[in-house]
Length: 453
Image (cartoon, rainbow, N blue to C red; front, side, top):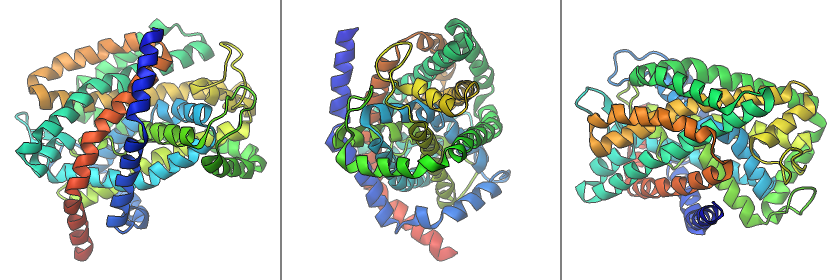
């Protein structure tokens, strides 16, 4: 196991080295400038379109624009918002939060471009369902000679879904429920597997309906809990914000159980955890947005960019501030020893301000977040598998997906995080190349939409 972990650490460091970080943030920055800051200028309009998009019965597609975003958020609002933020702070220091913000700000343009291309180049399969995403806009937008790049994305997506979207989610919720409520991991595993199967058998429409109801509820409940803590510790917020900005450019000194981190570690873990959480640049969210009932790629792209804003600039930021104002991010784990990290660190911070209720709140939030992520990523992985093998693979993939949940619930956490890091990077590469090559299409579509207003 140690040899396997060491190999994963080396692979993660290689994949998430400076070249990918520059490509990831650079692509988002290039799109932001090329769009003349459209995502930031049209944020208010995006929320209006989202509200209007709750019903779009006469448009082609499988999901309302609202439910398409909720399906995408179901996949993104997950353990990355609770355990991922804590891991970024534990390994990269508070400065990692700043680089999560940077990734999110430019990631809004990335998410916008992905959705515009997904709707522009989507197809209808033999079942009459809309199919889209990076593999389709690579093949249909760049031409058949680039089809190998689409194949690579679909391959990485099919496999990595079992890491980032399945086993990590099951593992995190099993640990949380065991630690806070004494629920045996096998019980959690079976419950998650059964509930997931109940939704999967209904296809994308049932998934969209469940996400449309569950995601807004769980997100608002978590935000309200975090805001309550920040109100109670309002005097500590300025110092926390100063620490984030200061450590982003100077690194974090060793203190307590924290071993210290330089600027490069802050950037690496901030960007990696930010992408893990909001998935901007990975190419997953456009798979959901391609199913939206709409004829207007720009309209859906404008709604899609809200996913990054809500996930990282709202939910992840609140989690980070709670951890920092709680004052325990350098503490030693009283159970396992060593520095607190992951969901345990977030629960520790909530519990410090809300004794007796903070940790259970985090455990419940983690369970809901993980469940919706299992649903969202099952759709992503299924679409990637269908692209590779055709519709006949759907039922076997769903059965394998449900069977993987119990395995993830009892596995070690750190190797899963490392494997997810590697797979995230491999998925991002084909998608980022396609976004750069197809950016003129995005710019032209956006300009035409603005001129038509």
